[in-house]
Length: 240
Image 1: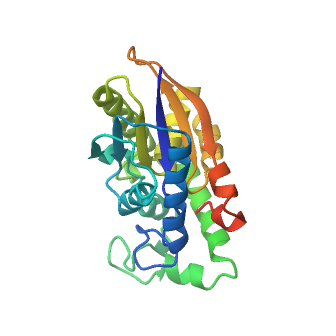
Image 2: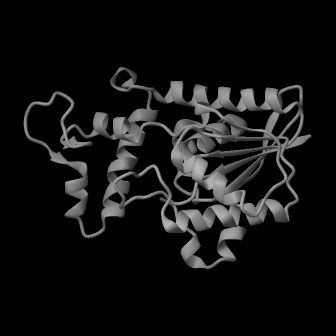
């Protein structure tokens, strides 16, 4: 059997104008990932990254200390879901990107609301958790650009496409927590509620290993490995 290593991107720019970029710590986490892959003697026949900047930057950080890989390809199937859309559908009281969906009426922006909170990250987590629960319930699919079922199907297809291209050899995928959750759910047969309990525990730069064979069987070998981060110190262990 061959391995697929699913790598969650490094810490993104929560307080930057463009969230889809790594923080300084996120870049460091990318390099730690590379050292871990090198230490495991991973020789990837194929490297895949999602189409998001934070996926690509994490891969580039890893490549500074890890060079045993073949072709590198981009696959949007490993992109994260649109969190702005998921939050906006559940919390219409906020303008997510500065304007309401209709452009009519006054709404406080989500950013402005969070800026007034004593602990912005915790306040965001509360809003985000309720939004995810609504989205993954499947009861409001028409409200979303991409429903939960569409999202998980997209992630699974990305996985199958990578397997087909790698021809029975090891694969390394740089992606986000959502796709890792969707793929782990597929491997373990989890319901939506328990899948997202797993999601909340995923660390930036964590490594999840799958095993697969050419008959299409995929199984979960390990999830959310983080020893390479812990060794670098407590500050290297982040979740958002």
